[in-house]
Amino acid sequence: MAIVSVELVKLRRDPTEILTRSIQPALWLLVFGQVFGHLHAVPTGNIDYFTFLAPGILAQSVLFIAIFFGIGVIWERDLGILQKLLASPSPRGALVLGKALSAGIRALAQGVIIYLLSFSMHIPLNWHLPALAGVVLSIILGAALFSTFSLMIACIVKTRERFMGIGQVLTMPLFFASNAIYPISIMPDWLKVVAHINPLSYQVDILRALMIVGGTSTFGIGTDLLVQFTALLILILITAKLYPSIVR
Amino acid sequence: MPEPTDIAISTENLTRVFGSLVAVQSLNLKVPSGTIFGLLGPNGAGKSTTIKMLTTMLPPTSGNAVVAGRSILGDAVGVRRSMGYVSQMLSADGALTGWENLLLFARMYGVPRKERRMRIEDALRFMGLSEFGSHLVNSYSGGMIRRLEIAQSMLHRPSVMFLDEPTIGLDPVARHLVWEKLRELRASFGTTILLTTHDMEEAEELCDLIAIMNAGKIAVTGTPVELKQKAGTDSMDAVFIHFAGDMSDTTATYSDIAQTRRTASRMG
Image: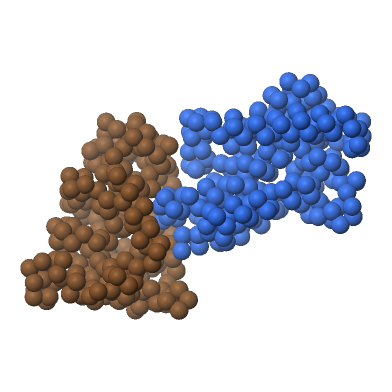
């Protein structure tokens, strides 16, 4: 929790990153959402495309914030901060979890902005407290999952240049091979398989069920949570093992 | 509980191999409690690798070491609880205040909540930083940052401290102030200090004992006076050249030099 509280202090002191990062989801909602909404090309059931898209864009923002967390750890290694953390008695798993929850804090701040954007665009949001609590949990869970994945990649590639290359290669396929901007039912069969093993699909699914009025879950909320928790646990165990290797 | 001992750090055939490179070869070292011990050598001699192994950041390929009575292999967490570490790089977080940097490490080291404020105030006072505790660290000078980092590493009252080139890039005034604080730390708390340095004046002024490493091995160990006698010279620079030879031009890697220059540059 010490690492998480540092993240909160930094975020409060300099929210610039959150504000600049909100431009991209705003463009997706305003431009992409508007154009595809008029086309009526995507079957979205009993909700319009804007409403369908909003949870996908929230999940995308969480992914984009979290997936580049690894590069921050490479910076911390180069600045000697990570060495000091690793020389402390804190368990490696706790250090990884601290970073993962820090990503959750940043993603939550982004989530607030996307809620405000969605509200201003008259997207019917579900304001019930249990639904909001579920959205908060799922944002933290998704950010923790993808940031831990990012830390694992950083531990393997070790340099900023390699990480940037791999980060770019991973982000868009994760996004497009998910149900963020279109339902899995319209995908070709091979992509359906990829979408089903892509954790982002489960995050979008739970957000779609909880964030918007009339939203439903394809996999079931229990499955969404179980898949994400299991993936997070596995990634934390692997990354905690790999974490010290980043300073060698 | 570990056995009380007069030796704070001891290594037994400590070895680390990276591929075909033997970075540290069968290192046998004994550092008496309460001494300031200087580990010298050219870039690439194996000093930083030795510190990484002693601080449990890097497992040895073979051999073992005991730090503050605890084995780096058998009780790595115990070693980490008993030691403080100051890295070569300027590692305090510039986006936080001095106080916040200290609070982070007080929590990381499990300093009891009730004692945190007192320990942080003591550490700031000890390092002459009391009036700067609420300032953002990115407004500190290089010397102040270094003192803050030493304050961070002493919050949990470690019996052993490792400092990797603690005064690199500092101006003479800041350097002397850091030396003074390290001497006070040893005098006040009996802390054993192991530091690496390239600065022969620092080694002579500050260290009770010096070991010069060369190509992963200890070339010589002794007090500054003893080393001068062995080398038949009055100059510590000449002692270094005598025992390290001309390896300093051939063993340093690109990343060694880049890191050293980056740190010196950030120290401003």
